[in-house]
Image (cartoon, rainbow, N blue to C red; front, side, top):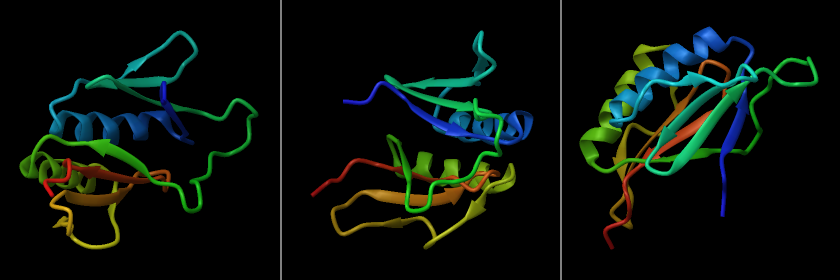
Length: 124
């Protein structure tokens, strides 16, 4: 259904530190700048792009929006959460936890305030 997710950042260097660390924790690679100056992360068929807003106004986090990132294991979720908090992210909601459907989830805000979650697939 989706081709990509694009989020705004006011500081791409700061965003790169955060996202390089969190994607490495999930087994992904470093982000690359495309020809238009956007950070691009490719992982397991998905694409996350981070950019300065094209209208020149400051980037703001979506109120009520959450970006979900697939993780393959409980350990990947924990590593993602640890890497994020160590590289400018803020832990939010509950500590990493198992949900009633068996998925294991963690939540962070990136340095620009975007809400992210890493989660394993449900087991029940």
